[in-house]
Image (cartoon, rainbow, N blue to C red; front, side, top):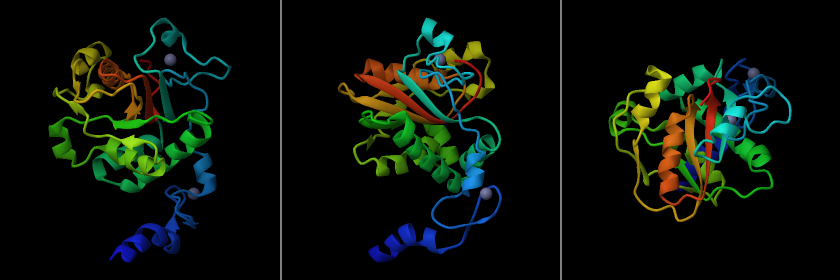
Length: 242
Ligand SMILES: [Zn+2]
Ligand SMILES: [Zn+2]
C-alpha cells in the first residue's frame, strides 16, 4: 500500500503524458507548463519590497507610499501581476477546485523563495496561511492559502506550517465588494492569534493581495502576539495601491 502511494506520488507524473496548461504540448516531467509558455507568465519584475506594488524599473526599493506610511508587515512578495491568465487560474483553483493550478503556483513560489526572495537569507520559521471565516470554509470546502502552503512547507523542512494558531473571529464581507474606505472597518479586529509567536520570523501566505488590508490586519495581530519579522507571500498582486 505504501509502495503504491509512493509510485502514485513520485513516479506517475513522470510516466503519464501531460499537456501544457496553455498550449497543450505534451510535457515530460512534473511541470504543468512547457518552458516557452512559462516565460510568457506575467511575473512581477520590479516591485516595492514592502507592499509589492509594481514599480517602473529603476533601483527604488520602497515606494513613496510605504516610505510615508510603512505597512505593518516587513516585506511583501508577489509572484505575478493579477492579470490573464493568472486571474483565471486563481478563479479555477478557488471556485472549481482545480488543484493543478495550485501545484503550479506553489512550485513557482518555491523557485522564487530559493532564487530571489530569500537567496542567501534566512527563511522564516513559521508559515501562516490567511485563515478563512468558518462559514466560507464550509462553503468552499478548503482554504486556498493552506493548499498553497502545504507543498512549500514540505519542500522547506525548516519551515513549520501552522494553520491553527491564527483564527478569523469576525464575519467579514468580501473585501472586493467594498469601497476602499469601508475595507479597513470591515477587516478591523478580524483575527485572533491563540498562542504567542515567541519572537519568530513568520511568513503569511495568501492567494491575492488587492488593497492589502487583510494581510495588514493579520500582520498587526501577529505583531501584537510576538512575531519579530513578518513577511507576506502571495501569488498575485493587483495594481491598486495599499
Ligand atoms: Zn506551452
Ligand atoms: Zn510600497
